[in-house]
Length: 268
Image (cartoon, rainbow, N blue to C red; front, side, top):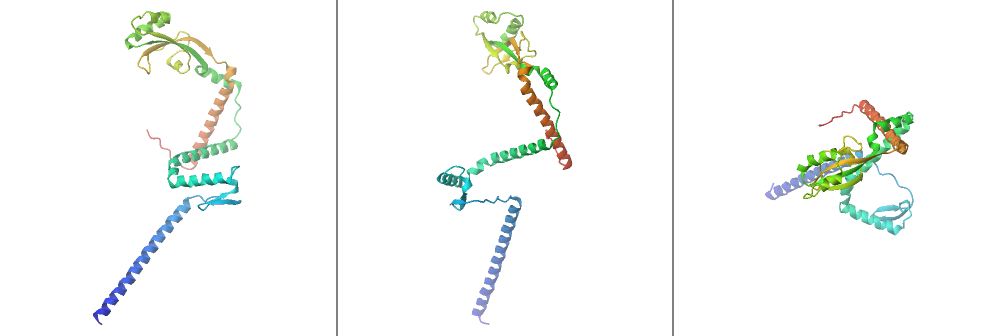
């Protein structure tokens, strides 16, 4: 066999090998892509089938008659173009967490609604239940009017507090400090500031408080007003109903967790 024939035979064998290699590589890639697509399809929910008249298409996306919802077609087309532009820019990624949270809340609320539909009738909340809750949570239905003595030096706190506790007139206490800015303010009925007192009675005095602006103050309750039970019945009934529903949901969750062998780990 001549040298030229040997050379041609070598090239022929090499070409066959390359073709087989490319074929195998392509087959493997197609197999991998097919498997990936199958995996994706197995987890993704199928798109709901749309019916009705197609009025237009934007980049292949159909716009159905029921997409208009009273709007004109040009407006809907404009919105679709802007939507597709936003998707292309990746703007949808900024909202994925919010969409997931919204979907999660919808699922939770929908499940709760079914729990309530299937639940046995609960005991009707009586006037006695409302009265008991009102008595046990009287602080929530009590407003206190507060006067405040403010001063710049924390070292004055003990002295001023003792004068307030003795019942001295607050304005006279302030007037006694001629070289220091001591002021008296009527805060009014303030529910948040009422938490500064151990007892919500007229004459009660708070500890020395440091204010956000760096100054200090002592508070005194000068008036107390109770919200009548009759004015609170509706809100109390709502609270008790919410507590009852919450207990129902908790019992349901415990049952589901037990039946499905769910492991619950609380991490400190």
